[in-house]
Length: 415
Image (cartoon, rainbow, N blue to C red; front, side, top):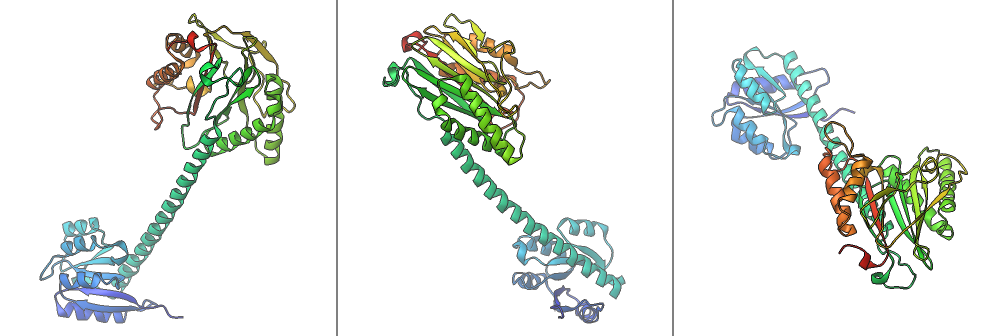
């Protein structure tokens, strides 16, 4: 089936040139069919261009009303879909005009005095090929923008869902008292480094006299890590009956996560720490699965690491099937505070690559022993951000989650 002829607009104020070019287009040959029209002024060329009917324009540089560069400037103001591909024509070679024309988007530059059929055919086909490539690029770019917009919308929704899974109301202990009279209180900061995070935490009631905290850090960050964090949320709900037993709770999470990841054919590990604060016994009991050691800020201002066993912690979740975790118990006094956090808090590095590190983190807590826990968290985060050299929107290169737990009556803590 023959293709439709290529609509070509010839713009030249010399009728002889217009007639010759129309004749050349009628006999261009080699399967190239053109339908040419001649106009003699720049104004007429622009009027025709606004109809959007022309695939190609042969534009003389020196017209009676406008020069070709001025016409190009007006063409470039038109919507992309209306602009024809342009081949510039001049009576004589002028390198400066050619350069300026190319800057304004012309596809080729021909000298009328030496114009012959093979050269015209080559210029036409080359110009149309380039225009076709440009059109495809515009379409691909538009499609990419649409897909990116959809992805951003999906990620925004995922972040909202992930934030909804985090605690919005903390439990109290003993059970049934008001938040004002609870002997255990919580405060957190959750800062994803991208749209979604692999850091996850839960705060669980363990009635009648205890409350528990789970803090997890999924390997990596982004969508994959966030999906695993969502799986952990489901496992937490499933194993609530074991919430008062840290070693059993982590063992069950490990078993459930291992089974899910095996079915998915994926290899991911998750560090986690789980602690139970018993207000009747005045003690902290915890189990650790490869996670940074919690820090205990005593009312005196001393900072202690809380380790489990000889190695300080057990293996990360999802690594060893049927792993049994052990627990450690630490006595608490009114006014003591426990801080759990993910490694993004102390792995922030400065311009030389030096990390903030655990020792600076301990010092930052000790320096803020006389202020309320929310101010402690904000102050430590500000110190880490100031130290680091990250250029991300949040100021941190990795996801960060940090949670503080106050033990004892409210009067035992700084206002």
